[in-house]
Length: 355
Image (cartoon, rainbow, N blue to C red; front, side):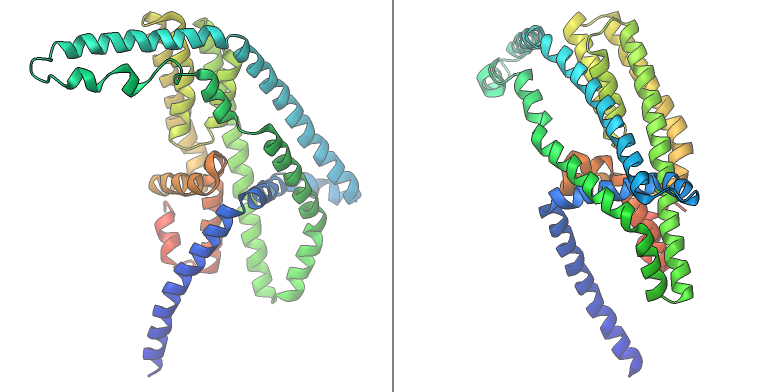
């Protein structure tokens, strides 16, 4: 009788768990403007925890610690903002020239395709009409300016998101000590040790991931910028920023970031030895950093299978867009750690983990 009741409860738990997960996902997606800054604030808290612990050990007032942390973050945003402003300025100044080059390349490609298709007109009489310029693309729709404007998003939303992240960060840092005290009071000694172990484990994984990933992305960006400068390709700073930022997106980020200097080289010089050289060079950089160095440094520490990394990339990209893609791996790693601490034998963690 007892086994039957237990089995029935197990079957009830499964649909309830699915419903609960669905509700959580919907809430995360709909309240993106709140949960995304909160997530970044939690990551910042983990990253700055050694700095916080070091100053707290010497009894530095919490207010001073928070002010110092905010200064470091603001200096970082100031430097990043200046680099971005410089890059966008140079990009915008040459935009009309590349707009014309882009349209010219489209026209050349269109003429070449039409000439090729007319050779098969006797066999497929309707084929050239299907590839009519008006059906595919027109100069008015092939606007790089419109593409850039559409992908940059709203600067106001960015400022609001950063401000909200800093507010969450201040409250998290200020209340972390009281939170630890409340956990000790609410839980038994064994549960308290388990909770602290889980938090420390997540903190260590996040810190190592962001530090190593940042260094690898920086190396990829610097070497890539050097190659772009050697080949005399425009938008060196823009390409460097893309190489650095998009490298945080697993699998597809490196492809997108490497495509920018290759496309720029094609528009600037056409098909030739420079295009072949920069293509081979960018491929070599991405293979060296992405396939040789990064798996040995980041992959082993996160303990995630490649398939799970890809699925998490798609899922968090759907929930939170490009920003979700950037932080998909650390979020999935944190979930994996939590599941393992709750139950080492759970099937979800077994599927997620690489070992």
